[in-house]
Image (cartoon, rainbow, N blue to C red; front, side, top):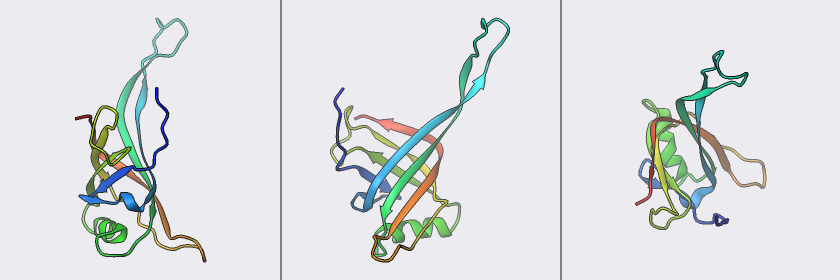
Length: 138
């Protein structure tokens, strides 16, 4: 297995490429563990995977220019359901087996602004996914 340093991650939210404004983006996926233990499991618990969920965590460098971070996320957060699409992959190169693209829908449940004097304006957010997450390799 090749170990890599990620320096060119791609993140698209609501069809806007925001890669040049992220310090980190991570998609965490998990499923509930449903206990299926019975008397016949020899003293060991047994489980099946239940409902799945995901969270897209992003550390943005905030930008209020047209077509950038705030202009993309604020309208989604402040109106309607807050649901929009996303895709992410480890590099801006073509989607491939070695550069899979994950995508789906997120609920924009947070919006932040502000900074400490002399520091970068950052927005560290966690957006829950809604519906199926896809993984594309071609």
